[in-house]
Length: 121
Image 1 (cartoon, helix red, strand yellow):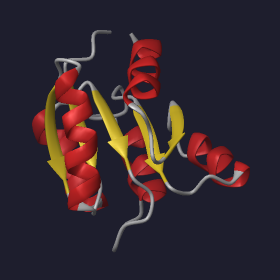
Image 2 (cartoon, rainbow, N blue to C red; image 1 turned 90 degrees about the vertical axis):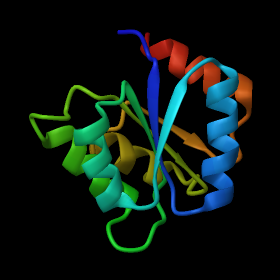
Image 3 (cartoon, rainbow, N blue to C red; image 1 turned 120 degrees about the horizontal axis):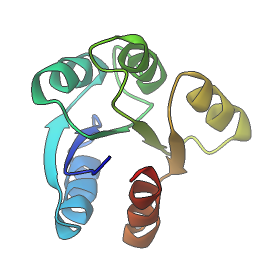
Image 4 (cartoon, one colour; image 1 turned 90 degrees about the horizontal axis):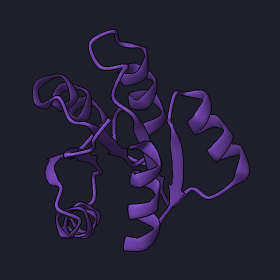
């Protein structure tokens, strides 16, 4: 699978900007959603090759949104990388159990992000 389009789901405009800049610098197309519900809708309408999912968001959190995306026949083929400040081992295990392919703790550097994406290709 070649990653070309990435959906960034994060309620923080700053985090969306920072992640977006890193992804664009890697030659990727980026689309954004501000919360879990919008992320699920964008996953269905935009057909991204990868979803970068925050956890702590108002309404539906990233764990719930990841579970919804990875269990829906329309979107379950899209890999999800959880990208959050929640760095506890239990959070990581829970994120993977929800269907995430990988888990990174913010702040994530461009090299770490590139290697996580490359591992999916």
